[in-house]
Image (cartoon, rainbow, N blue to C red; front, side, top):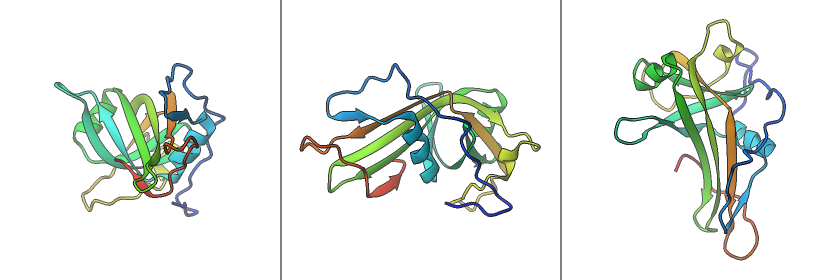
Length: 167
């Protein structure tokens, strides 16, 4: 997804380190923080996880990256209310190749906020699959990031080349 002159995609503000508490199980390899950001930049759809009353509230969203923040478009509702309250949230992007039995996932945790109209992130291009009116821009700070890659079972690490998006 590329930006036009009117809708810039900003560079990340410095390197992001992989969460040091990330435990990678057998069959998985960790992905360095700078590669996690690169993978996020290549994505357009992810899953936003909000705190729910009985279980996590998961919402598919279109997104883009502006500095160390995930930018999303939304309407007034659950996501907007979470941003207004500066709720903690998580976000995941996954890629997988069903034929090769390989894939990778990037998980971000941070705080939601409403994008100030003077913030440069307001001009970040965020695609939309839905025709619904989603004029509000919200941000998720990238406070913690982890990434892992699923090995393909042959002893080598496989990169995902197939489907991109939220699984």
